[in-house]
Length: 260
Ligand code: SAM
Image (cartoon, rainbow, N blue to C red; front, top):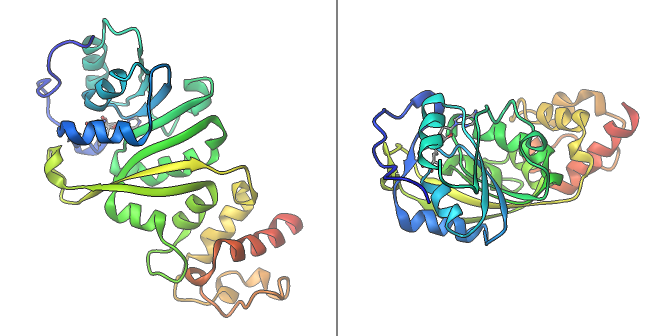
């Protein structure tokens, strides 16, 4: 079992690592419940912090590989879980580590993500989704709204298209600032993401196309994607990027991925 209390390890939360620690026990167990984590599961936890969520995962009988960048927290976690065989510390930057280097599949991914790099983490996970069966991740609520945004809404952007192409996504619940120490200024949302099979949106040239399409949101696609003019007659390029459905992006993707 783990040692002592994780509530006051004696050093301050670091803003640069997006450290807002969850202290609400009911929410911690709710997150683990959303991931259906059970005895025997293997879980990669992104950003374990002081180990509050980690303890909740370990209590189910699952084994945890916890990826933490902060050296102070690495030392704290090593001590805290020194007697726990099912705990494995991975002292790395998640953006520099391939999940395949952390653990052999299959596994689940869970994390109360550092908000400053949450979209970069999501983009990375989308490209490695063949390795895991599901991910339960916490985002700043505004970012979750952008991830979930459907076509013809103002939140629709590169992130929504890429995330929706890679995963079936459901929002499970919101969490107010009071559940964290220090309390953030914003609300948070927990999303459950189930990987979809590999598809055309995994190709770099297609991601680049979607990114260019949204680079100047007010402009028509025939301006932002001028190289496509005359190459895809079935799609009206006087439309704006945010109005396209995933299927319509797929139509455009087929043009660039076959011709480039
Ligand atoms: N899971 C803990 C909780 O819920 O209380 C902590 C969550 S806190 C929002 C984010 C955690 O991610 C911090 O522990 C932070 O040090 C860690 N972190 C930040 N950037 C990271 C990175 N690039 N790679 C791995 N961990 C990172």
